[in-house]
Image: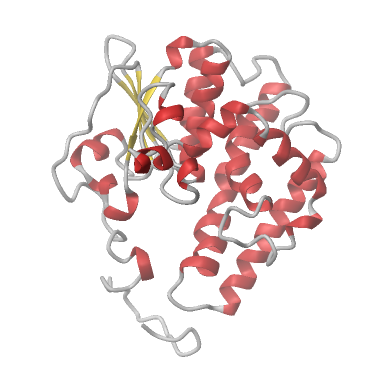
Length: 290
């Protein structure tokens, strides 16, 4: 692997299977399944296939919020997809999401199963299905959707950009880290200014925009994402910190954050969720104790 200062791109790019650092075993330039494996199906109307990354957390937070609001039809099974092991390339998962990215949702509550992929699409689908957390009147609806899609378009700079080069790349590249740190801080400043005059991201109501943005930017200012809080001087973003703490105070957010989670405190890891009681009996600290 070439050092960042002596690499000249070839005329035609050729895939080096050893490139990609710790993700080399799952990164590839083609789509489709690598192996046959059907997805499991539980007893609830909604079947979620995911891992507890920030993108995965968006949907489990939404589902837990729906249940907390009394929408019993939002009961769900959350099956763990170990993306580091390539579960997302199984034939069943590719049927649910041809892009092989978590999360993927299959709604089996109707006559025909409905697949939904891309975290933002899942949030909108669930909001419209249950009539919750997405305003129906304008301009509040447009504001909510605008901030939701702001997150969908911005997060790749934070995760695939800053997070990759700061935390995961096989060697440090100053230019790449500087480039994406600057963009991450710019995005945090966008939120800081927005939240100076607004209780929640889209205005006075808690919406799917908050659920989408919090796992990425709330996790960043709370120091959870990439252990980069000091590096990015997140203490500067007082309004984002206030908002992040307020969102995290919600019991449904605390529950949703740990579903399908594979890292951190064992008490904050519920690898699979098939019943509301699993939060009390099946987190990894309790599993370890037998």
